Length: 181
Image (cartoon, rainbow, N blue to C red; front, top):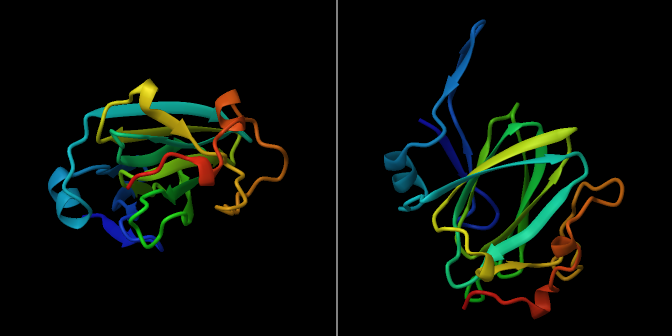
């Protein structure tokens, strides 16, 4: 059984798996549909993704309009500061963010519900990030909000200028972003 902790924004859940280990290594369940549907949300995952990034790389804040993706994210190598922003206009938490450190060492996972923008900053020399998605990726529906938008006010643990893609460097300001009604 895993431990499920709702964060400051309801619906965003930090998940800590039970790890069984000894001198040979460890074993843990990373997903159980019955438990997840009971404790978090009844979902169906349709796509798994795996990315690798180097130290100082910042990815996000990404989301998909019309067909929003819920994501169950975890780090299998390295460490990242992971951030979600509530962009559901009807939510009491609209425009608020929450961030957590995910690492291969702490083995924590984060549930990012549909209707949230998502991003992360790599703290270690490199990080491998995997996530399960509730809808398929659709390039034409992908949007990006500016990671450094002062309206959102994310406190990134950035010590130097992060390494960004052109898309992330030119993200939309929160006030101009397409959001969910």
